[in-house]
Length: 142
Image 1: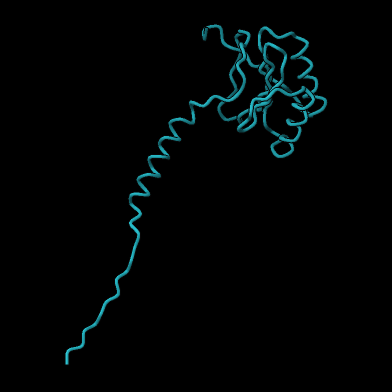
Image 2: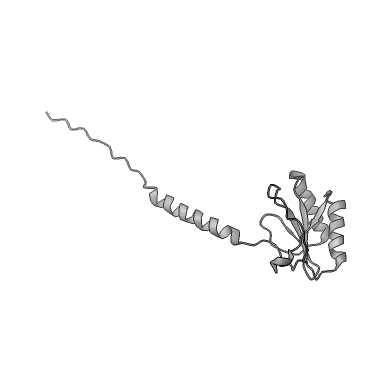
């Protein structure tokens, strides 16, 4: 007698097309991520200053726009205006998990000096930031 051995067919999903799609999506995200600007449109004053060193952590950026509104750029922010006290409280909360993060103020050139100083004082007194930096544009960039 003739015994026939049946082999079971193994059903496998072809994952190559899925990998191709994922690689294309990865490339798209890698190209577009640097183009996304976070923060508020601020016209910085010009000054000759030293840039932050490349080995430092990315700073927390507290912004004051031309109308005197305060903002904080942390992660993916919604860019909604808030009070200076709220900015200081958020900075304090962030510094609990990363105490060596530098903090800089991004003050518009048209805003009053008082608004920038008020934010800097709150950052030092309320948030406990040891030193607050000021952002400027270099004169040759404009």
